[in-house]
Length: 235
Image 1: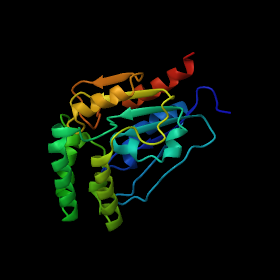
Image 2: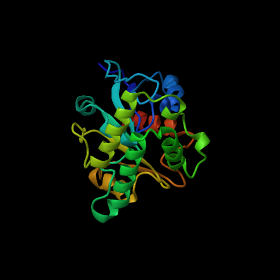
Image 3: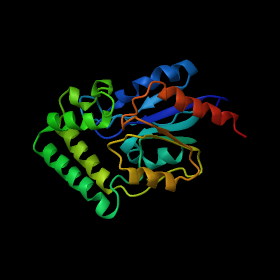
Image 4: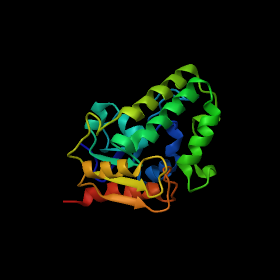
């Protein structure tokens, strides 16, 4: 039986990132004696990691951006709560509104195929961080070699960005959901942010004004964990 007030967190990063993006959550979890297990897609110098739920604590899935679509359906379905950070159900808006983004994704894939990983990620990280300085963004795959298998995974997941169209299989629609979005997000289209809110009308939304896709805000982890703790007090 889960201990009252105790949560276990599974955290899934987004495209082009790795498990280190959750370093800011580790101290907050340790302070509450909650466990934190982190996925890694194996894009760069770290091995693929796909943790599962343990027997201790209620189950909270915390996902960033594309991470929502990278979690296995069985793990997703077993979550007692979901936190969506700069996330989306679909990444490319429907119709003409999505044309620029479709072309941008195609150009990114062509650059990856040509081996321009360093240049691509230099520009991509700027967009993720803005309007905050890119130096504040956690280190990602750009800090080391990208092996052929990692490059292939980046390209497959880039294709998924272009094709995802709805909440993924296994999404626990009966579980509490929290949406946190950056008001100045330069990666997720405003139409797709609105689409996510419409698909999850019961989910509270925290809009961080002046904050970009990287959600570079001190205290974000405490805000997320505080929301989870408050669920224990709900009737």
